View 1: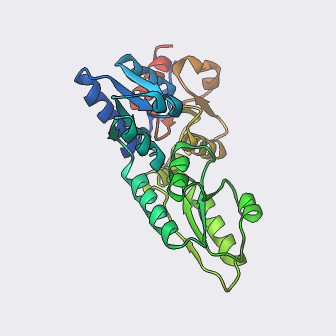
View 2: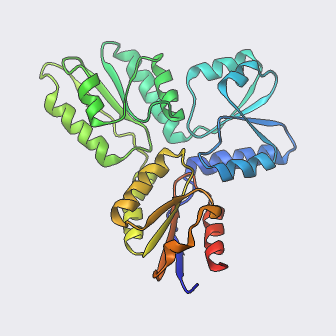
Length: 286
């Protein structure tokens, strides 16, 4: 197969995910038993690799039953309740919460405590691990909105609003929400928006669009649970209709490359470089 294949050098783990995986690997290398609360990253192949090294994934119910153990908190962060359970159960926390997420949690917590009459609004994906951690800073009172339509339905425009965003959301979409609230909120109320989107993630959107435009076919390698992966793949598809989402090399359909000269391989902030390389090697050896 005479194809030119390029792996996007801007794809792959973000800083927060890289740090979490390094912390897990360091602990496992010591031979210690290590649990992780939830999948360490939204990528099944990387989770399998770390399970092979001894990492045990648990959920919140299992955390409640665990005693005298070490538990890693992944980059997405956790609500205050998780830390309290760990304290009560004599669990040693290895905290790999991304610094960007941690700063956002603190900002929401302090602002919520200082402005009890305002609506704390988070633009994010309901049920997402990061969002649960953010809502937890407000004792569950924050309002989560996933779209501009939900902003119109859920918010009271005669009450003060403090608006934040999940760190991996689309920056343009967030700005549309900010504009709408500014144009509809009562003149007698206060509206403050905090641009809390991670630039390392946001900058990938224009970069990946340019990358997708330069190739005949795009293989976007990502776990299907990845919120960031969904957003980036959607952008690829808008730019290049011959974009295909796969989780692993076994999902490659080689008919996609009929008549193509160049293939671009890219992925999410939760996609390991080794997985993109495996996909490239599979094509080269087909």
